[in-house]
Image 1 (cartoon, helix red, strand yellow):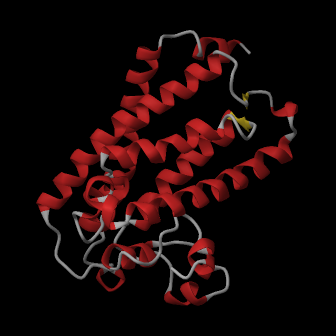
Image 2 (cartoon, helix red, strand yellow):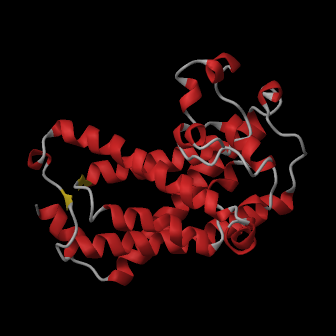
Image 3 (spheres, rainbow, N blue to C red):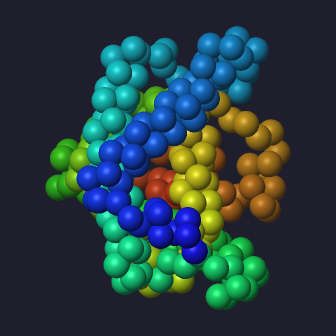
Length: 244
């Protein structure tokens, strides 16, 4: 495809700069937009839905933004690496939906989310080990009460390890570019929602059979206060299975 050739006809440095810009714009639009909407515009109206136990701290927000910008350098590097690897023809990424059929795009999307959730659960739980927490995960918890700005506020070692999932999965699972993009968008939105500090769903949903299987803002706010529970990214499967 001509579009694919044009996408892969640039240097690694070009990809890096483009993806760094895209990552920053994505962060400030989605995380910043969510913060503006829920904390500035609707904050007073949604006070009963707030999960916060402490007032907002500007220093914490600034810290989250700085960490997120640093993390963006890692995310951009890995995105550039993925596109460069695709250009070399060494990945399982593909562009023609007919290669595996339209049904596979949906199935592979769900498979990637399940694999990512599994990967995230175990590395996240490992990050909370006393030997590793201080230099791998403490930055994310420095704000105490999460806000949308916290969604991608990671220490550099954690950002690297989290990014490795997508760098590796493209060698294991055949993925259409649409599937890869959809997984990245889902991850971004889900991270913002889980760090929102407001519960978007009614309390009854948390006790519904379906609601019990998803990590939302309530679960993750509890995690930021009690480090020994709720390590999942999307689902509660591993938390339930392993007693966390």
